[in-house]
Length: 355
Image (cartoon, rainbow, N blue to C red; front, side):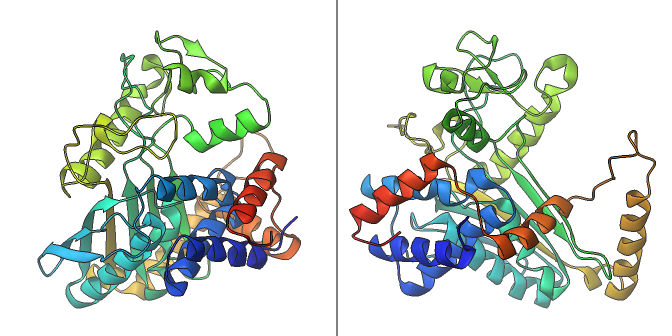
């Protein structure tokens, strides 16, 4: 078990080693380790080597000039200047907070960015201001649309964070695929097979070997099979791609620059970098925030009391598991797989740091 503060310090030192300012390095490290705290191990420090690799390949600018390229009172388009998405995301949410305070709601489309960690972190950033936060991003083209063999979309997550009163916030954060790619990476490290409905091989047949993706296979949309509603997951992923990529001027579909090392970067991009889409909505732009939060408490309490199929299983509200895991890991530390420990030690050696 590793104390989360020590992991943050280490990640911050690594980001500073690749040229980030101390402020940006600390922010990037906070976003990264927050994933581990919430139990989303696929997007935490296990990804650190991926950011270092992108920097080594000249795809991450550690000192970006993040700038507004177009705006209205309630909207903004941001050019991330190839910076870390871990840094760009929070800074854009801060811009939206200011806009939403002025006009009620605010929306941002971002181009020329990179992988931004867990979407939930960015959506939750405006919760203290009694705002609803929304975050989504396109990602490495690893997903085959329904009935397709070809990889066209990313896991394209959606997150929404909604404040409540006495109850904890409602925080939904999910990929629009049957499983996030990071979970496949974890299976590989643990030498385990993938369940039915997660991946297909290059011919479109259900597969179980995690290495299938490297052999031309694809992740499946949420729903997995057509008769189980995979077209709905395909639609969700497509909407995220359009809002994040087409709307901002970023790359979209199969042209999205990949985070994974086994996919090539397109020689003929259709936009700039990777894209995100964010939103912030002031509750009192719609109704009294006190009345809303009181009703959110009623909503949450009633759903918790829903009759379970199995009496041993309680009904969870989105965000419950992550909240419990955060409390436990802040107290007891964060577990790391042996393969992740080895990766981090290699990074420490590379930059002459202590892990």
